[in-house]
Amino acid sequence: MKPSGWGVGRIALVLYPFGVGAVAVNLFFANLIATWLGAPVLPLHWALWGGAVLGVPVTWVFARHIRTLMDRADS
Image (cartoon, rainbow, N blue to C red; front, side):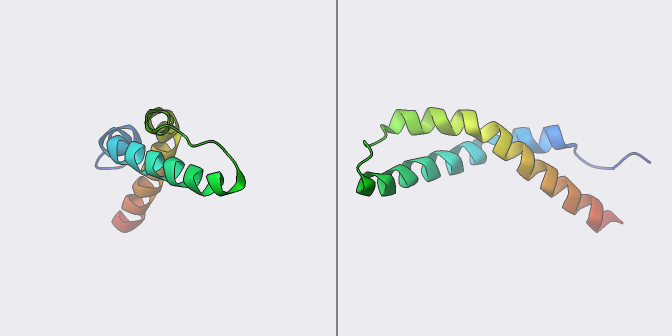
């Protein structure tokens, strides 16, 4: 039986901007905490690029989780 509704890829594409923002904010603030240990401050554009790159797998995993919840709710 084919699952109804959106697939994981479509869900991931819709949620990708939110995933990028979440990862970028977390990278930036984690780096601010790391500055207490003597690490250099991460420039904002590096945090944004890191969010764009790391946002892909994070969003994909979250989309799979959402699809599983949708399938579980349908059954």
